[in-house]
Length: 247
Image 1: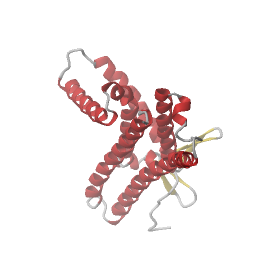
Image 2: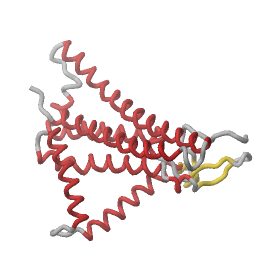
Image 3: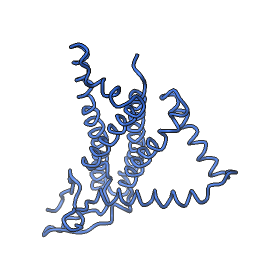
Image 4: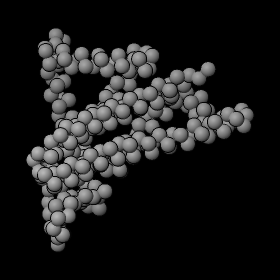
């Protein structure tokens, strides 16, 4: 219908591989992974023992991130150990948020149905609740795996299932359900902020194209960065709590 703004809560399918549906959010996540993979190979070949200006700038950023992680974990070795995981989460969420609002990618799409509804080929993965839930599950699973590896399987999971007395048992059950609460909080916070931002940009573009979306575009760039930072930092804080022995 003329005048309608196409806003879909769930990711739209763009094609199928047999019985497997490929959505636009999944397609963009694959594109980002491909960019990361190719970029990593190129940078690894250009890495030098005597750094140039660009490499020195990257090393300063990494050093700053390690100092921040060390302040949370309390140990430099632990910071270096978990840097790849935390940095991967942060970079993947950041670039998925930014590429999801990239103007050129938003114009690529196909028309479907009798009403010729435009379906974009690419959509921010974080605006798909399936993606944010999967990322939250991976994050919390990694937190518990880190705790089990550091303290031992039984010692780590004893905090969830403690039968020494009724109070400790009740506290442990609360801790167990809090892990699921963390997943829900992780997934819905990221999804809500990114999806709301994309809807805001669509509405502004429909009201006054070219001019009105510009300030909101810069706002969403900032929000995308902050949401990735929050997700990464909370994961780091949870890891720090999981690997620390209770006294």
